[in-house]
Length: 186
Image (cartoon, rainbow, N blue to C red; front, side, top):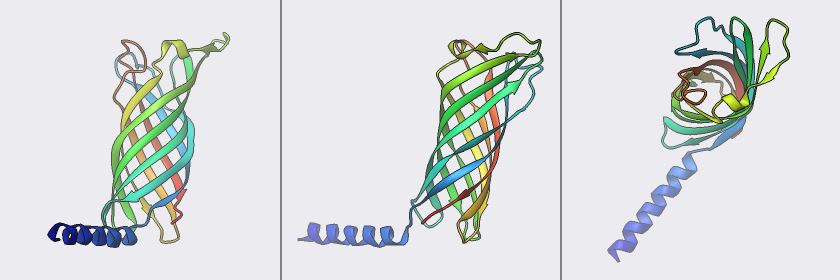
């Protein structure tokens, strides 16, 4: 009987917590400024692109939530002789601290699946499909912050620092700054 009472108390507590936590979800989009870093990146400059996708924010307490996202991201770098255009499908998994003022800070890992990569030679030579020279998966860590209005509109800033190399035995890594907006449905 004691075990049944404990189980009932736990179920009741879980129901109360579940009723107080609201999962939110929505679209997210913004602009990227990406560059390659590491050995061999001398002469690389930022390339402007964009990202678009969606998110789900799952509260785990009053101030903390988990937020997986799925994003299409146009990235790359502008090198001395070649301009690279990379298209990724990215899956960030973020841990967020949320303050009642609407401010939030976030950090977490991210995996990226390379959809395509093209090298455009600045000397006029034809574009080259460079996907075979690149790793199909790329990992990074994201750090950011943002602010959400009570109406659900939010703004965010995130820096993603590459962990894995961009190709076999490559010491090049991707770095990305993203600035964007989102809308949270509840």
